[in-house]
Length: 126
Image (cartoon, rainbow, N blue to C red; front, side, top):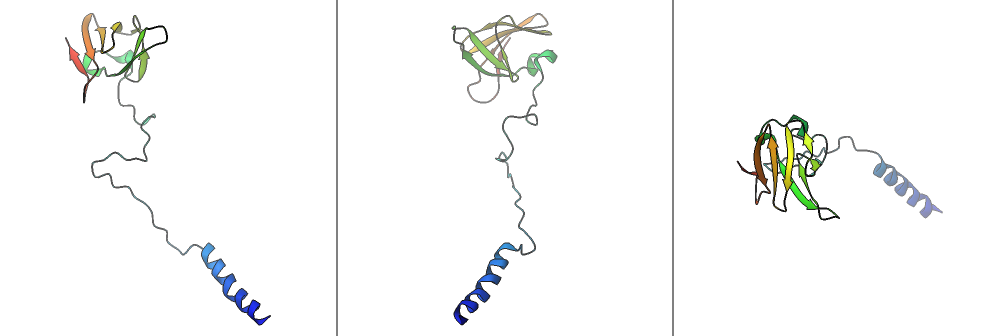
């Protein structure tokens, strides 16, 4: 019996100490050092820094992010985070033509060809 009391006297305080916080906790702080913070979502309201298509007044505000072919063979593009198709109109912006590698747009009557970027930013032909 003395052995069981001795084990309980050692075991119970040890269990209690493991569940009691020991005061201070280490707080994790991410140091970016020029890299992207992996804890910030890539998609979300905080990330959006491109202009809405309705407010486009200059080709510099337009960003071509991707082109895809739909089920019926029609091409669609993603520009400034929105999916667009040919003949769509957004204020001063009109989507004229979408090919596999570029989108022809008209902004206030001037036509531009926006190509998918190889590496880096959007390519624009005037």
